[in-house]
Length: 366
Ligand code: ATP
Image (cartoon, rainbow, N blue to C red):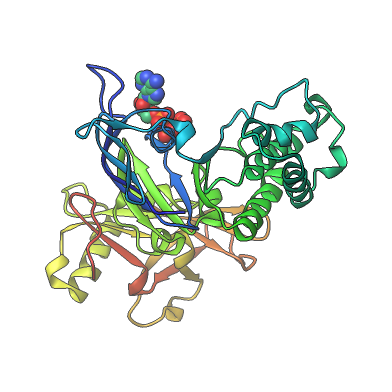
């Protein structure tokens, strides 16, 4: 499948409304598992629908390989059925009056493929998705997760070069969701399909994607591997959207800056004088260590003393809430905490754990 290219893609739904998607440049390469990630209303579904051809662009261009499929300026718009893409939306609408086998076969019949080929393909995807045993049942006789598998099988049977999935796991309970994620990863490997997957769930994106595109208010914030997004967030929005519990942010430079912020600013200033007072820093909770003894702090780290005000078990790991005056810091630990509320502790973080942002919230390369 050729690369899908969006350049300067824009969508405005009405005369007086803000852009649902603004000036979006996105490249989706063959075999990629691309997750569009962002909060509700950020333009993920609109982006997917523009790729599918269910919405036309207000400006910009979409190309599939060398072929322009949508361009306002060139006056080109190729309809969805000529784009060779499979779509599965949140509501996966199976035909209630057709058996699972007939549902799976549906797209192949539409394409008028010979019977033997249809049978072969239906069998292959039903086996792959473990739904062959339900072949004679009707959708109403299957659970939500099983129906979702049938919807995926129906898409895969027609062997689309690209699968477009809009929150396809949103109706499932936690366990099924996990199973289906593993299933999707397997499908991606086995069928080598390019997948574009919309989700607002950061864990889903982190576990599934080869590339994540983080969006906010219609604009692309960052595109990169899950590790890039997590370890080198391009700005504060990405840093704060990805990660749970969320990243600790310390703002510099205002008269109201807290003691901890001032300490962080001074620490940064001694290491990088040019960055003093420049914006804010973020420290992920798992990057922070703590010790009951003050002489246990690793040399060169950013450190201080605070009081434990909360010990929150999360099943196998713990969140500690530390406070000092108006300052609060959260850290996570996998070792059973030998502290209780009221214990005075030292916290510390290595210099590389400090994400530095300028006044506009953009990452500063250290
Ligand atoms: P969600 O996760 O809630 O589905 P999303 O990130 O997929 O959100 P979109 O559905 O793409 O976001 O919506 C982006 C913006 O465009 C929102 O402000 C939404 O209200 C607006 N919008 C979406 N569809 C239409 C439409 N058909 N007409 C007018 N405005 C729309």
